[in-house]
Figure 1 (cartoon, helix red, strand yellow):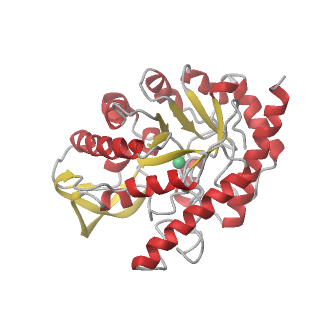
Figure 2 (cartoon, protein in one colour):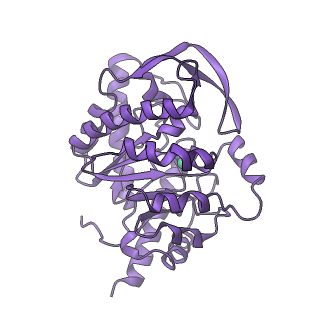
Length: 344
Ligand SMILES: [Zn+2]
């Protein structure tokens, strides 16, 4: 296996879990196993996720987030200062209500959270590997804060914790650490005032490549309904990209396929690696390789091939497993089509 130098493919992060491990086609799905059987099952699921990505021709692979129930909450479960017993209802990203845990004291990380999982991922594949963590602002937005009473203060506390975890994950040999910040697409004033700085704090001093993922969310009803209110052109990225271009974060993962994001906005990310979403995670049909290639070609007008990484729009955890596999294959094949056109 040789890794291409141009148009290296990757995914936003998550993949569906096997039905013997968790309820299929659901977010926050409960585990179906317990104890040692659960730990063994999670690792077997990681092996399958790696195999699916390998067979599809994905170059920079993830563990498919097979070891966590939720991309934010599972991380927070590992911290002190958060009460999971008495949940409160809050509005997530101004969009939908969810029962969330409550910050009741200073937040702290007493032990590693994903470090053993990251080491396992590293040991199971010869591909370059990416590990995903929630971003500070998105963490703040998934909790009720009864202690700091300040979104910014809580974000700084989370940024320090994330940095400790990220340094340990990088030391386990991971090539890329990506922070997921869908909240960056909603709270533009906060992104400008403290969002970028807390993200940089989370990524400070990491020896590996750093990335941020900003999207319009999973293909669930609340997000799909919200997208309908955004008008004919989605220009949310226009406010954030210039700030990210000036930041220390090296890669930006964004949504393009089937979206109303004007593709020329990616020109605002000059100097960054751009992970172009060429797979729609809200459709129940697999793209054709040609459709993937068309998105890549349009992005190539604004980003050179060495800095363009074909990717998925967002995580695929809520999708049927076969559909996600077909979308992975389309991503790998579509990138190969364009690679063949530009390699001469
Ligand atoms: Zn996303």
